[in-house]
Length: 310
Ligand SMILES: [Fe+2]
Image (cartoon, rainbow, N blue to C red; front, side, top):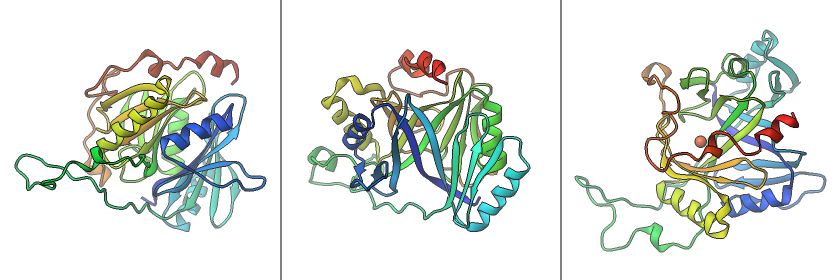
């Protein structure tokens, strides 16, 4: 496919500085203020991937998707022109901006470079394999360095018209479906990672959670622990391992109410025809092991406010 990754998001939040402080603690690097520009934070390997703007309530305002070639933008524009789910709002040689009509979300497709990540410094010893680490302790127990997320890897987006939003992302933008629980949620991808965007049926459009990939499970645990050591109220759900996608997770709550996830070791898919999705039922897809999800993960506490302000 011509798409290969998420590039960036714009998140509307009621208190920009409070949310920015959360993301700084989470391990993102806030860019120096630029006159007239919004607050931006960078991941380690993906550059400025989070933009925060003031809003009455939390909202996903923009989603960026990276394509390999300019030709990919032209193909998407042609499909958008024929779709009842999309409106073209801006088109230049470097940028195609569409509006997803069921929720109003702005989706920007640009030509983007792939992520280039340094090799993890962590070593692992396993039975039956040559030890990677001998005579020294594990790196993760010896370091005081804060965890730095590598990249923006996925989000879960609630929509009041799940079939329409899913059709927009699959039929127009070109995402592929990796797994789905019919009527509840579809896990879609724009590259080799099992899911970059999960589209969930909801009473109202809202960002359920946003996930950042870290190097391994050590960093999932170390990052989550540091966040709740600083403020225990940030804890939402974890540590555990999902069933769909197999990824490790620890979810935290940012001040605007959106859940923010450290994740690692998610499944990769080489070709659609080679992947064999399971038939998932109910909520079994949520996790393979770990503590059960708190009710607030399934039904955010601010849902009534989100509905009232929609
Ligand atoms: Fe997630």
